[in-house]
Image: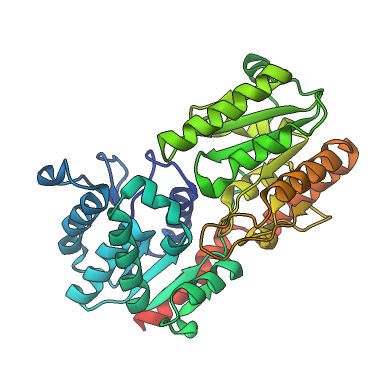
Amino acid sequence: MRVDMITKEYPPEIYGGAGVHVAELVAALRSTVDVQVRAFGADRSEPGVTSYRTPAELASANPAIQTLGTDLGMVGDIAGADLVHSHTWYANFAGHLAAQLHGIPHVLTAHSLEPLRPWKAEQLGGGYAVSSGIERLAYENASAIVAVSAGMRSDILRSYPQVDPARVRVIHNGIDVQQWRPVENPAFLAGIGMDPDRPSVVFVGRITRQKGLPYLLRAVAELSRDVQIVLCAGAPDTPEIMSEVQGLVQTLQQTRDGVIWIERMLPRDELSSILTAATTFVCPSVYEPLGIVNLEAMACGAAVVGTATGGIPEVVDDGETGRLVPIEQIQDGTGTPVDAERYVHDLAAVLAEVVGDPERARSYGAAGRERARTHFSWAAIADTTRDLYRELVG
């Protein structure tokens, strides 16, 4: 069986969880499936991977139109595949057209949903209407849709009521606990100014509305001043949110020490050493289909504090591997808390509880690594995905 995997992100050009997912899934599938990867970006040297750049004629076009142009360049090359599998709206158009042109099944994996990310209009302008329309077209016509959590499945069916529920399958994201593991690196920690003997809260993620970083920064102001905050945060969506985050960080730095902000993308071992040293990892997302970053933290032995939204409760076992922070959200697709001040206060209270009890935090971390190992292995996820392919191809 030949499967063509269509993706915007693929190593070495990865900036989010969808790219991690694709890379790990491809590696796990290739022992039994001929997987051809078709990815956006610069040329790759990996066998079986073809890269596609934005057509020169579209260099000044809206980013959404550039995406569609890149997709069109892939469609003809998919000839000969038994099935096409696309990831995110960026690749959905190529998957949809290839299925029609070549008469093959189209599977798509839902890592996020455009109707639940309305802030993207800040980035794309009218292109957001384009991306939303393309996503709807693909979802309503795909042979099967993979939701990375039960929460995501519910979001899909609510956002796209024309989709047959029988076509939406839950296959969780995964984690490689051999690659993501506890790492001790005192020299690196000293170099970034992190003191492993002080309680610490670590955040890892892009600077985007859905990740909830501004809420976290306001919550940190309520924590004891002996608590360090380590922000591994970059790739801002817009200048506006970057400016907001910069202002909040500067305010914290004026009133407390131990506020560390790392904007560059860290290698796995360096990031693992930060997660290993953390008293707790925090995921303050207001929209999170699952959150691979939570699995990465758990695999490194960190307790996890996460918002009780989306797929996070399917990863974080409240009271066993970490804590969940309650949130009541406005039902307009933004995930905005009904009472932002209350959410910030509740987040601060749960963080204070966890960092204030290092022994319990270590217990959460040990249980989290075991949960990551037993419930979220890529081998099992690849087996389930392969079964879906076989069901569709016959």
